[in-house]
Length: 369
Image (cartoon, rainbow, N blue to C red; front, side, top):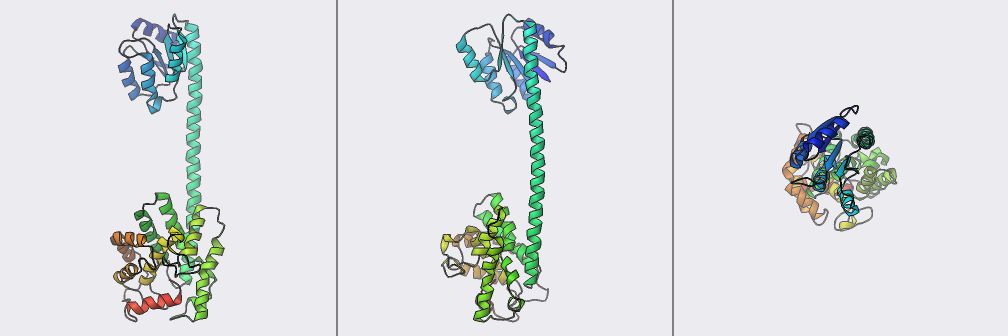
């Protein structure tokens, strides 16, 4: 442990240094200029400060206040030396942050006892702080491990669902990345942006309950098949409802609302405008954009520029205009994602079988993206 004694009298400093020098495990620094003492405290950490009240330049009260303003000295013991018995002065000293007093003339035994007790308290405080830091680090590691396992399970489940729908898993990766970009552009904090990135891949989890004959059918669905396909939203909600974690709650809001439309013409509840959860409004833009750019059994892939135009066209009717605005602002990043994570064969042109308008109509008639 290290102590600093501040007194304008060199003889008093020497005397106090000798009184404390044989305390085991204690290193003592002496300083007769308050300003210099504060500079010493800036460069090293002391575990105890003993300061005289009455000194030229700065009083002991001013030194105490200056030390308490430093983060590293907010809790260390400070002892004030004074010959004053005035209770008002002592109250001011306590309010400034003084922990104990030494009266002049000094009693060396009392001084050693007080310093020993205060250093014992300081050691206990340091030990508890170190222990708390180790516990905090352990909790952080455990929390990170749990989050990583949760993330892994979600991505593997989402990939399985996507592959059953005829994809490779690239669709969910692109949707997740575009969702995060739009959330960032809307000004959400990093925690929410991460949550929507992890939750978005589950947007079609309910498709696990749809028959293969409907899910993989090429071309348009019959009205009965359309009704069955749309049921994937309710199935997904049933899978995710009453989740204990924030991640599952956000995922449920995306599942329940990503087929709703800004003008109220969507399904399953016909929600309108801001009644649709914001996570679902973000996911709707990302999902439709990437669905248009992806190969499906019922349609070829669109060029990204054509899909971009379709998203802009749907602003204010299908999509939240604020989400579309961010989509346009961050288009270079979104285009890069669409080009980097590909599940389209090299020889796929996207327009070989249908026009963009016809493909868009097919997506709408199937009631799914």
